[in-house]
Length: 289
Image (cartoon, rainbow, N blue to C red; front, side, top):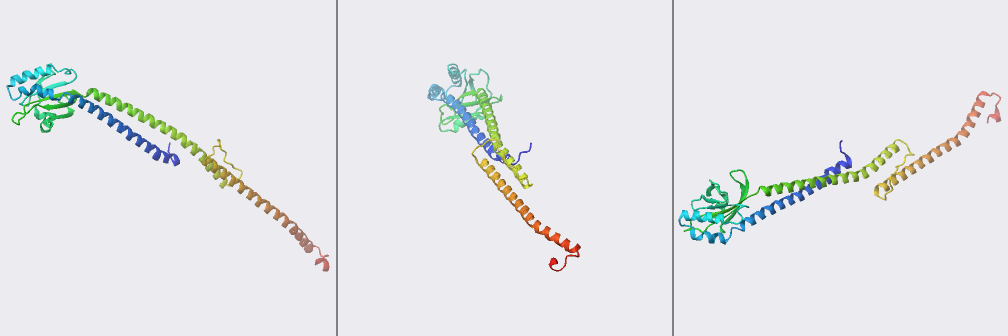
């Protein structure tokens, strides 16, 4: 169905602007929720990158690599929350000495963006989120160990999967979209109802005006409800105008009829006398005059 007139202006202006405003507001909500979840995970991981890590490894950095690897295993095994995240201890060579996953980690420092950023950072701590070699979405927080003679001596990485967070975010986005379309539906529904309360009486006024133009002075605009609004006032004004024009037309017709009657009587007499004079030779002299 083709939309035109007031309905078209409402659809292209009010409805479009409402949809855009709702979209912007809900987009801000989505961004806020994503930021909240990411900051929560970051703060959670960063809470473990503290002085206790430095205190534990300080006696072993720059020493025997075997002792460092042993202490790395000891640190990881004694870590309370290793079931909720993966802990990797990186040695001075840039390889992973030990991981709480129990699997061999082939990544080196050159492939660990968070470790490289932590080395350059003044705080020695850096976070990173992305996809690992297995395609899993992760977030990691790295803390470098005290440097020896200004050289890299190792780092500890706290890594967690963002899979559960991503599922929650997707669920939230789905709910937001559902709310968006439901809200838009009710806005459109209420708008259509409101537009009809305007369009329907305007169409009646337009139809009455067309009949009036065609000469129907008996037409009147009937209103189903008598709300005291501008459209009702317009309908009453047009009805009054039609009534005035109809009265004026009737007065005109009565005047023409009266004048015609008044003129018809002497004209009839004149015509009769003219015919008498023309066809009666006896009419002469004073009678003719």
